[in-house]
Length: 166
Image (cartoon, rainbow, N blue to C red; front, side, top):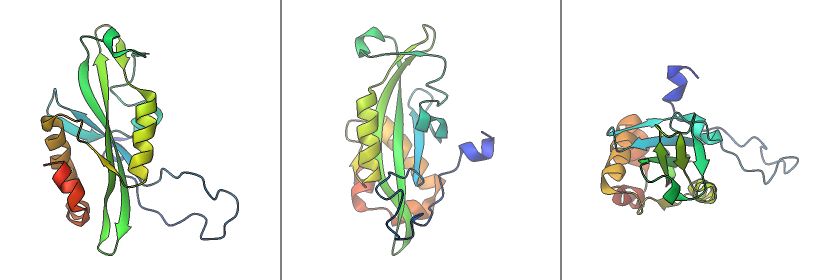
């Protein structure tokens, strides 16, 4: 993935079915979803589309453990599923849901809850905002990133999202 593609949100596209109701109706589309990595250790947030397939930079070259206690020295990261939509004012951040991941790079082990990631991905697609379990520093990093990345998306976003990230 080139540097340009790693730092872009997916483009909002029209309905591929065009209302015909045929093949593919009811399929989940991830065209409007992007994954943002929030790294409170380095005070940064960035788009990493590799997370869509569990292949983000922080997820590579580690073996995932099903139990968080097996990764006691893991560094905290957040994979935040950000869904964009369009309203009367234009595109906006519609759904935002964060999921933690703990990575112990020296020991090449990590923890993440796959059911939580799938559930939060779905909630983001449905326009839910789930960030209250994130630490304050990480929420502020995410807020600042979203504001700076696409200011017009932020301006068009709901008060619920803005308040959740304050």
